[in-house]
Structures are given as C-alpha cells and as structure tokens.
Length: 310
Ligand SMILES: Cc1ncc(COP(=O)(O)O)c(C=O)c1O
Image (cartoon, rainbow, N blue to C red; front, top):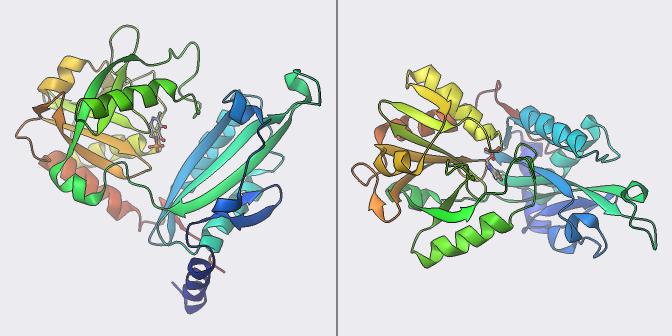
C-alpha cells in the first residue's frame, strides 16, 4: 500500500474501530446504523444481501459478488436506487472509513416500508444499506488447525420451490434452529438435508466431501457460493477430481475429507461428522492444497481488487 493508503487505514481504525456503515445517504459508525421497525426486510425477511471480503487490503472477487447481488435484487423485484458503480463506491467507502485491511462487507437491499396504512407491496420504497466490520470466521484459523465438527440435522432445509436458495436471503430460521440443535450435540457446525434426504448446505456455507476418489458437492438446492466456485476452479487446476451431483449423509460419514466453503473464512476443514472422525480425524492434504491456493489467489489481480483507501 502507498503511504497515503496506510494513513487512510490508520485514520479509519482510530475513528470507527468496530466498523462503518452506509445508510440513507451517509456513512456512520456501524453501531449507529439502525433499520426501521416497519421495514419489510425486518418484519418479513423481504430482502436480499451479499457479503464480500477484504484480505490484506484487497477485495476478493468483488465483481462476482456484485453480479450475484444484482441478480438477486432483479429476481425479487427490488431496486436499491443506485447503479452498480454507486454500490461499488459505497462498498469501498465503508471499508475505507472503517480503516480495515481484513473485512467482512455486507450489502443489503430491503423492500422497505409500505405507504402509511397500506399493505400493498407496490407502495414500498426499497432501501439499500452496507457495512464493513472486522473479518468474520465461521471456523477460526486456530480451529482450522484441528478441523471443525459438523452435525447432520434433522431439520429440513426450506424447499427451493418456496424460497430460492440461489437468491441470498435472510430466511434463516431452519438454519439457526438446526445450529442450536448441533450445539446441543457438541458440534460447531450443522448441515441440513432437503425433503428427499439429500445434503444441501449449512448456515453460511457450502459443503464438499471427498468420496470414491473425487470431491462431491450438491449440484442444486444451495446458494451458488463464490467460494464454492473457487473450489471447483482450484480442484480442476490442481487435478483433484470433482463432481457436482447428489451428496448424501452416508457420503459425508464415509468421506476421506470434508470441507466447507464461505466468504466468512474461505475453505475450512471438517474433521468430525456426527461425532465420528472423518478419515484420520485430522485436516487432510487435499483440503490443505486447495486452501493454500485459495489464499494465494487473494494477491492475484485476476481475482482481487485493491480497496480505494484514499
Ligand atoms: C446459505 C449459504 N450458503 C452458502 C454460502 C457461501 O457462499 P459464499 O461462498 O459466496 O460466501 C453462504 C454465504 O453466506 C450462505 O449464506
């Protein structure tokens, strides 16, 4: 980074150490960003969002996240009132004001409030907000050294016919209830099955299992994770076979390696499934190879963009 950018990072950190937000046309400390109790994003989960991260002062695949966010808004007939360049400028602005070199950056478009006394959705004014906070890990680097424990839940994932999982959404009651249940079983993470019993995804992550000589990940019924996409590309680069198809609970239980993928932490090893060790019970070499390449990509201009700190 340049000296001016360094100074920008330091100034932001001193001012708003917990993070910065953009709401209703201006920036503020993240603690001060508040949403109306009447916003349908809150009362109906009628909203969509996306999360991109910053690592060592660079966004990872910002274009892919902006593409997905814009497709999600179009699908839900939401209008943020800003064009892509406007959203991009705000995303940079939040990181700059928070002075973060490693950040979790979330952008949300909500249905907003309907006209007074009306329930007609068409009278609602959609809203956009964004915030940047310190980087969030589903599994911290320390936890990744030994691997996480995963529980296969009895809670069924909301069917894709009801809520399209490809549109990133806040319909998290199935995911949250399943996670609380997993904690009760001594596990750190949880994955949910669909109505047919096929594995789908977990709260904030996609899942992969190495079975019968190839990585297997659900072909459908999940968010099309940007980190998932990275794993598919990286596996091909390093010659690890990979298939998108049907992943079952049995596959997860007999896999040689299991990993989860998320913007919140990258590629993270799972070493326990339903209380039993995965393979040798330690993070496997295939996962490690993918993870090293994933983090190396964060320096590659093909996949990363420097934050505009000044
Ligand atoms: C339900 C769900 N699945 C998967 C993911 C992983 O997606 P990405 O790799 O784009 O972060 C997320 C991210 O938050 C998610 O919410």
